[in-house]
Length: 331
Image (cartoon, rainbow, N blue to C red; front, top):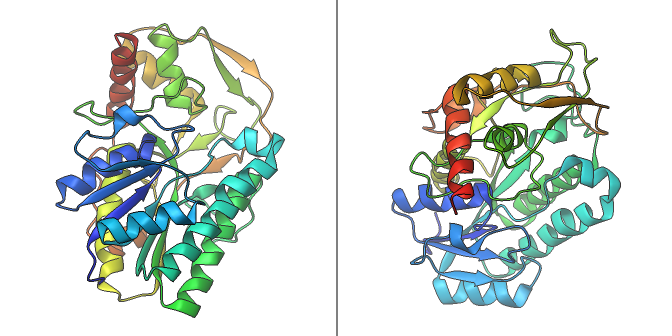
């Protein structure tokens, strides 16, 4: 474990990063947030948390933060995350995810950072042959978003071998919901996440929900995903950080999901049941880069850490998402 205990959270004003800030503080960690606010929201970061607006590729900013706040650990959330956009604008994703992360890792190594936790994605698996998907599954991303994240995993693996950096890469499945105390949630109006958009429909912020593809080889013809509550994912970062600090393994690759999935139509039905309102939908073509079925084998994260999900309930996830949308609507 590093003698320097403070934690730098990049992208800490974003959806998942903001929840991680809350979870880490509640666990007693000193946290500092770096976010360029290109997609983040300053109001999601508690006012008493040190905050710097800047990019992770700015080595001078990162070095100053590390020195000023005695940072020993970096948890890296900052990046671009929209799969269809990565297909239409791949170079943006290689710049924001791969190149920016390379710069950050280099700065961390130069400044003596000993622990690094990376926000990766289940998109590194592409269209998996085995579901639930174990971490040992072949890596074959079907979109530039997944490819850009996988390259960062490779850089961390090689930095660990060359420089002794201890790291974990967490492969997220579909993250949804909001903090149960409503201190944070998903703010972006143009988010493509299914539960977010369905919640916007039933709260009147969006007219209609597109169902992208109705002819997949699934029971109802729509894609299946493993939905994990954002607060459970944030809590996983606390437990994973503890595991990284023990230093028993130089690198951890861990899926973060619940191990079971729901189809698009099943999620829509849950939103309708929780809200008591219909979700207006329209059929749309498949989106490029969308795999048919993504469900986590979460055995490894349960074994490697003390993490135990508290909110493995689709109705609860949907309820918090809808209530968050209502609060946004009320300003």
